[in-house]
Length: 453
Image 1 (cartoon, helix red, strand yellow):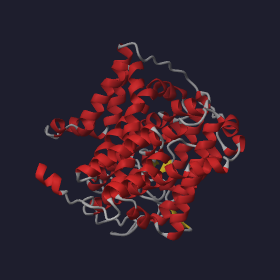
Image 2: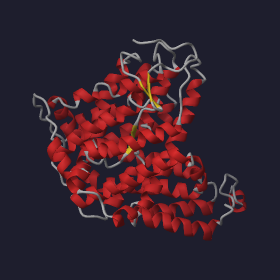
Image 3: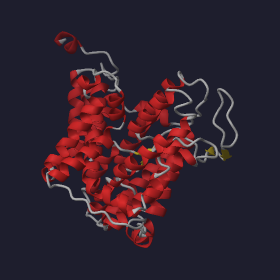
Image 4: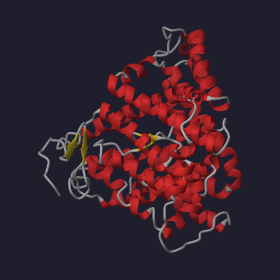
């Protein structure tokens, strides 16, 4: 370990520009519980994107997995190279919206160019708001009901995607859904005594879901596992030729313009993630006076722009885009962090360790053999949890009947037509139904609601 931090100080590292590099085992202690869990959860959840890459980009599994091995580096870089304290991930709530957008273009190179267009516009927004510092102001300009409609659109699109998938693996998927939803959201389960077994299962809900899915799927004849020995050789040449600007070229201006509405929606979702991350860090800091966590949204914006553009040019475009935080893992690490220095010496011990083993294990064929049959389960659980979380977040944002109906309408238009129609109709309907002053949308119930209640 390098230089120790002083009590109440910032964890040491190597400063470069606005960023701070912290290496595991050098600047921060390695936390093996996070490293072991993170290895399998990161590979299984990250692998959920492989079927989407194969479907929309029309690439073989070897190319799709090569993209994912590279995205692991760019995810890890946010903490290791850029110095953020967040357990980085994708812009997961944007995934269903992006699938709707890609559904409007032809699979193959056209879909790749469409994803490049989204990546360019979103990265430009990150840079613009990093330079101007207007991210908070932009977020405040978007009315609450419109945000709720955007998020509800993501929820509807996520649930829609699972209607057909469940017919292919009914026993496997339904069982895994029930297990994960009960462990994460069940009120009766939450009321049970906090035994070690309960805490262990709840904190590893997705891992438990994968294990149960593997057992049920095997007995039901829906899943088969084929284990091979050896190492996976990334297909970098074919990757760059098929899913990067080097191979398919840059998108047309018309395609870039068409990506603007969904990119604005995505930025709203990202800023929401940052606010959630800040609230988690603030809550944790009450229990950990020994460390000051350096939060800098401008730095995060630059890091997100570099991660997305870097992924695009070195490892092909990534469908959900790189985001600031993997919410479920951030919550898990925060709970460990609040337990004291014996559990996690620094917040960075958790966030850096989480991806530490996933990088090398992603090249082992036996590990891939275990994960590949579970990829549909990983994708399904990712979309299900995204839809579930987006739904209750959206519903909590609207406080009166008109706003609830408005949010549902915008969500339906976004999911069934397109994000562009969703944001366009959202602005018009907001002015017509609610008005620019907002009525009762800021948290006070309407007269009608008070009468009903």
